[in-house]
Each structure stands twice: as structure tokens, then as C-alpha cells.
Length: 351
View (tube, rainbow, N blue to C red):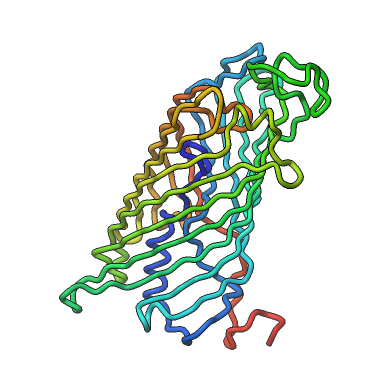
């Protein structure tokens, strides 16, 4: 997720980390060695789902009603796990390593408050994430005191980003992509029906430190950081065209910070992210987002959030539009998956 891309999560997974760590710590000890988790996989450093409104307007070149009020926007990102590999036991040994392969059929959908054509072409952003995560219990000089918990993660992501349109990329071209006249278009972009498509390779590193952890009262503090490096590619179906690469760039890099407080199982999070493109002409500005969220314990995985995003628009072909958006709504951290446990530890049907 780039900064501001109701993507990006980026960042991704920080809000559920305290619940995961407290749950693992309070849970039953598992057998040592490499184990396969068929259910209740541990979701760390992954995308969240958002649904929100904004009082601001969206600019689109070629739209007669632009700039138009943003009525509602959603990021729908269910994280679908294959069986997860687990090595070690956090409760017994004070350390665990997790290996996960996750498919996320991510979609961003934006609806404007206009009389006609209110829904913009969606951002289709499916991806596979190969993740290695390590959890470790850190004792201070006083082993009877409150310990600290460290979580590290590495995500290797193969993804796609497109808008499903077949119009020419530039506004001065006619025809349909890739048969456009003139062949070499010029700015501005065709922001209404222009084809936007790229495949990408993304590397993310994540770190979280939890301290003053009380698994009985479900209290803790958490601080963390993350960074990513993303490359666009023309390889494969839907790969980036040479015309798009010139304007969109070779990729993005970004960093993020997060702080979280859990009190009696209620979580309060403050998160910031900064991203910047590289290899683009003309040069684009950095994008900054700051997000505050509250997830009550009774919410069972959802809460409320407010976010401010300033910089370049993150919504597919609108990437040259400058934005200054306030966003208010719901954030969801629920992930689909089986919840059928058996006494043998094997999944149903494999007894």
C-alpha cells in the first residue's frame, strides 16, 4: 500500500498485532517443531478493509461535473490464507516463526455525489503475499517484571493494479488501447476512460515492539515502523506500457510509523505513512497520510477511523491529481477462514 492508498496498508497488520500476541501468549502450548496451521492462521502486516465518507471533492480531467463531491469510498481486502507453517512455540519457548502464503483480491471503489456515472472505474489490485514473520518474548534484567514482545515481518508481494478501462492513455489520442492515434500521446491524461494497468513486485519489512504487556488485563503499548520498495513491470498480462511508465514511473518507495495502546482489550492506533515515486516524468510529489483509529473490544474486529491524505491521488489513473482529503468511516480487521477445531488437531475430513 502506498501512503494514502486506503492501500496501503501498507502497512498493514499493526492493529491486529496486539490481539495476536496476547492471544498466543494466553493460549495453550503447542508441540515443538514445524507445524501446519489449517485454521485460525495468524494475520500479521496485511491489508485492512475500509469504508468511509469524505467532505472533499475529487478532480477528474474530462469530467464535466468535476470537481465532484466524494460520497463514499471503500477498500475491500479479504486476506485468504493457504495453510500456514509455524515453527517453535511462543508460550513455551518465547519465540515462533510463521510462514504464510496469502491471496488478497483487493478492490478500491469510489462513488461520487453526481447525477450520472457516479461510480468511477474501480482499482483492481489483487496480489499474492509470501510472508515470513518472527515473534519473540524479550525479558529485561528482572525476569519477573513485565516483558516485551518483538515482531518482525518480511513480505514479498506479486501484485497487479488496473482500472478495467480500454480507452487511450492520453487525452489527445483517439481509438482504443493499444490502437491509438497518434501513437505517441501527450499530457494531459485521459482520466475518464484511459487504460491503466501494471504488474508489480513489492518488498516490505515490518517491525513492532510491544511493552508493558499484561495478557490478563489485555493491556499493552506498541510502537513500530515499516518500509517498502515497489517496482513496476511490463512482464505478464496487464503489464505496464512504455507510455505509462514514462509518466507513472518505475516504482515507489515508502516508510511508515505506528503507535498503539491497548486498554482492557480496546485498541487505539495512530499511524503515519510517506511514499514517493521514482523514474517518472514530470516529477510527482510525495504522498503523506496520517490515520487515527479506535477498535473497541466489543467490536470483534472492526472500529472507527479518521485519516488525512495529502499529495498525489492513489486511485489508478488519477495519479497526477493533487489531493487533500479528510476521510471518516469504519475499519475492519476480520479475515475469512475456517473456525472448525478438532481434538486431534487435524482439519475436518482428515481424521
